[in-house]
Length: 374
Image (cartoon, rainbow, N blue to C red; front, top):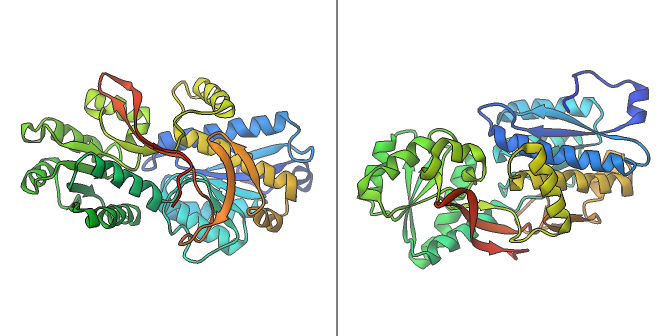
């Protein structure tokens, strides 16, 4: 539900409680992730309103498309603040979420980040921002453990320039180096899919990690590697989660199977997660991704904060320490976590999964860590 851009009248403000929602809904943003994120949020909003809303007032989602653009996201935060939203929610891309968090902090607007994982979501500790997704340093270390356990010691990372990709490569390198692992970076600004294949052979790599966007250059690199007889035994991995979404399978078919990635779901959903997943499957006409569950949980947490502490923005920010919600993926509580400047759910469950080569529409769980510790 996307609202028109106009300041609300006094009667409208008194009649409803608004949450601003940020998501990448157009290219170059990851559109499918944005669609899943908003679907989860909208389902939670409907359920909150069916249960009586916030102190009898309906909850409304005011959606803005970030298109993976940090400047656009910051401008949207300014606009939503002027529109009088009680809180801000969402965003999938880490670099975009970081820009939104900086503006929310500056404006004193509570922001519950749904899906971005970059550890340094803010430059300084802030009381205004909280996050549901586990930090990149946790998830990518679990992924590094998976690679090490599978026997990979020489790992190539095809990387585009980005704070997020650079942070991920550093985590992998630092975690694998003490155990004899090497991460060789292939700069995608200077590489073609064919030259990536040559670099893998020359570097004697046994695994290639895609630290790049989807569909391109990820799809072209995967196709080139799959068709190179020199690389028949190499593992292709995508820790950022590109294969989670159906667009990956549509683009690559069988070539997109057996590409391990990170997702943030438990091995088995509880009753709430199962029920929400069933409804989201009908809404999306597809299996809901972990991002859809993150969207649902975001609104569930904010609704509880607004019910228990009121709709004043300062009160909502003060509620992070005391909020406790049964989320779709486990009990959600926020703490101050060392090295992270925002209130953090520590932690959502983490899995390493891939698409089954025999049935690319089915996921195989390769490693699962529920409620991990840092």
